[in-house]
Amino acid sequence: MRLLSVHPWLLRAIQIGVAVALMGLLWRIADGPDAARLLRQADPLWLAAAVAALTIQTWLSALRWRLAARQLGIVLRPGEAVREYYLAQVVNQSLPGGMVGDAGRAVRSRGPSGLLAAGMAVVFERLAGQVAMFLAMASAFVVTLAAPGGFEWPRWLVLPVAVIVLAGTLMPLGLAAATRMPGRIGRSASAFWRMLARALLARRVLPRHVLLSIGTTVANLGAFAFCAIALDAALPLVAVLALVPLILFTMLIPISISGWGLREGAAAALFPLAGATASQGLATSITFGLAFIVAVLPGAAFIGTPSPVPARTSRAKAE
Image (cartoon, rainbow, N blue to C red; front, side, top):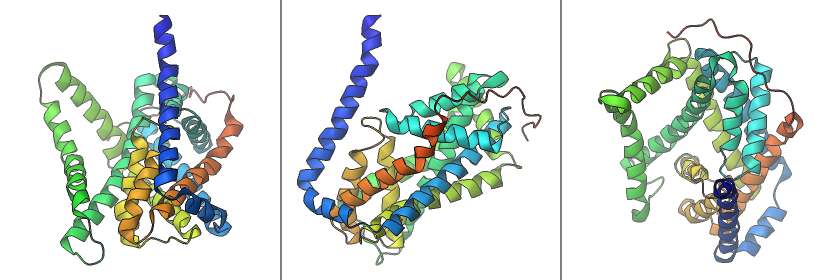
């Protein structure tokens, strides 16, 4: 029992160590002093634009979560959804792993509908955002390969990105195949698919999910692009669509604190493909991370507030 209680803290210590080690390594190999110079000279107006874009991304994500949750029987007022989303982001930025806040969002909103429905609402909301980001990256990848000239993919990167695009494209087929399997796997996959279809794909909500997810993707990519402009490292639109999603996807790897170190490493490696320098990539990623922290700071005001715990359930039924 004692070992089990120590293990999470050991894991967090490792994640913190990974983030610090990666940042230290990048500082040496990506010209950290030049990155520091760029940070000191950052344009405050473009930084404010990045914070505004990330704030809009939070609001749109909260509304997307509220929409998915309602389909699963959980009713949240818009203000409640925004408050809980801010609070979850503050927790995610504070603790290693980047998912603790989302788990807390599910627990705090479960109400009479139960933890399963609340947890699935959170999962589906995050999934919708990642799918939109993936489609932006995959579309840019396919278009730039089919029509070379505007952006040249290096050979070392084509195969890994192609594998990511292919895997993401085949994932729905994998889920469909899993629903036909016998036993527990088939039953679990079928239940997951039914809830997914109810939360995201019902006719009344699908158009709104599409619009909200486009909005969050534009806000995220725009915020990163604004940070680059603030450091005089503006990226072409095709590079924003093709490379920035790859940079941001590294934040999903749970081996550091909120992607710190991994995101900066990806930016330092990929920025030269768009005609920028590794130090500009490092500085832009650091700026984006700091802008995100500033954008979610309002969530600190909600620490200690009671959970919404809806006493009502949605009367809307799945279409």
